[in-house]
Structures are given as structure tokens and as C-alpha cells.
Length: 187
Image (cartoon, rainbow, N blue to C red; front, side, top):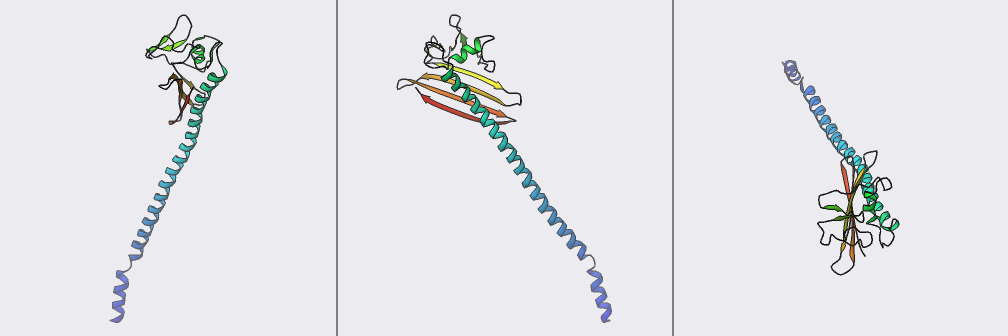
């Protein structure tokens, strides 16, 4: 009878190893899926970091273009060159073809001086006249062949303490990632 009792005990524990193996496999599966989910999210973050850098430098390109016009393309009789951007927008054939000025309803083109000024500003008679250029807003966008885009707004307006404030806002975009830069300078 002693042998019969051992046989019953062994017979009832026969499927335990299968259940233990099943639980071990479930635990391994959960660990592998968790690591995969973490790695996938990290790969997305790393890809967006690269796109973010490209978008940042696109925004920086817009700022650099405005600074180039402000400091290098100064019309005769003017002290700064910001307002020459509007002249390049309006000049057909000889202007910078990468600049597209904002043609909003408040933007008016002067027939006499061929310059752009914003009629919503306080003193729209001066506007973007290159000779004064103390109350002006210029907006343009550029799209490059590889999908990099930047939209830039440059504005100069009178300061409450005298002088004027020169402000540049530029937004770069690459594959859905946007970065912005804002530069302020007092003249």
C-alpha cells in the first residue's frame, strides 16, 4: 500500500511543470513587450530631436536673411535696410525671389515710392518707406526643396522711451516639428 500512495501523489503532480513553464513564458513575454515599447518611444524621441535641430536652423535662416537685408542691402538715403525687403518683394525680375511679402488686406502698396506699408499701423503714411523705416512690418516665407520651411516677420516700431524697437520672429518647420526664434533690438 505504500507504493500505491506514492503513485497517486506523482500522478496528481504531472501537469505542474506545464503550468510553471506557461507562467515563465508569460513573464518573459511581458518583459520583452515592455522593453520594445520603451525602445520604440525612444526612437521617436531621437528622430524628433534631429527634426527639431533642422527646424531650429530653418528659423535661424529667416533671422539671418532679415539681418542681411537690414545691414547689407541698405537703400540710398536710408539708415537701415529692413524696408528694402519690401522693395525686393515688389520689384519684378530683379528682387530676391525667395522673399514673398505678406499680402494681407491691411497691407497697401504705395504707388509713388513702390514701397510697402501697413495701413493698420498708427502712422501709415511713413510705413516701410526706406528713407524713414521707423514703423514697418514685413512678413515672408521660404520653402526649400527638401521640405524645410520658415516664416519670418520683421517689425520696426517706435519705442515709448524714444528711438525704435526692431523685432524679428521666425518659425522653422521640418516634418511637422516647429521651432521659433525671436530677436529684439533697440535702435
